[in-house]
Image 1: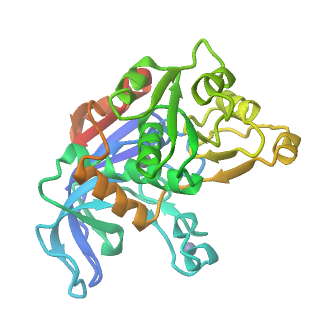
Image 2 (image 1 turned 30 degrees about the vertical axis):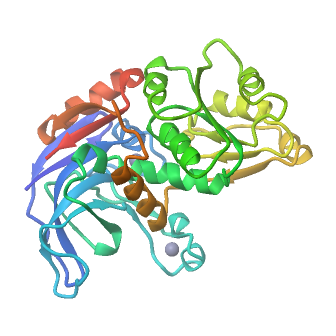
Length: 338
Ligand SMILES: [Zn+2]
Ligand SMILES: [Zn+2]
């Protein structure tokens, strides 16, 4: 089978490998397509803190089951599935309290361990979610990033709240849509990129604002009047954006950090302490978030119009990665077909 491997920064190799043998409790997936995520780009350029070269990339994947281990009961050959790509141990404290997305032995496919960038992949079916055959590959491949948004909106406890989402990329957009569906009073999304905002405008979000020439403080005043924002969700993962969030946050605001920050950010802790700001971390999702993501994708409650910017074949992975690196402002989600 054909497999994609990142050997060193900016270097993609295509290797022939044996199709993996499955254990009794595993299934064999034929990968149909993967989505390329910001994390994959960090891995491609060698800037992800948790990775080691060489690595088979990708964690956002859709597949079809082609073989089943003797102990597997809940799936059949021919089932179409999306992969929940965070491996967890089931033994540590976070796992035991149901927060296995923050497992002590957290391993994301394509980052800490080899990912879905191969024609076939052996996996424990507890990491799979069945999807209906009618769900298009384009929508199915967006289930994983949508699950991140669902988790973020739940962590933020958005019901009845004024919610500001900073960053209108795939994760920011889906976080804003999930917040609306989960009953937020008003949801506003900001970005400095008109391309991403133009997509957000089609997604039932209350307001989409370009902050290139205005401060977040002004957006909060204009959009939420005297009440302000109850919740600010950082989906930008950029130092300056976070410092502005902290500076604009009113007293008793909740801030949820969803974006992956590449570098440490120095902040004034008294701002958090004296203003009783609740800062929450957010990492990936649980199965329940996946369940909601699939449900809303099938029902059409979540809009995905114009999300897929480009589609490449597996042999064009290098070209796909370079094109994202060189034009990130024009890219929402790139998909690779197998
Ligand atoms: Zn991802
Ligand atoms: Zn664990």
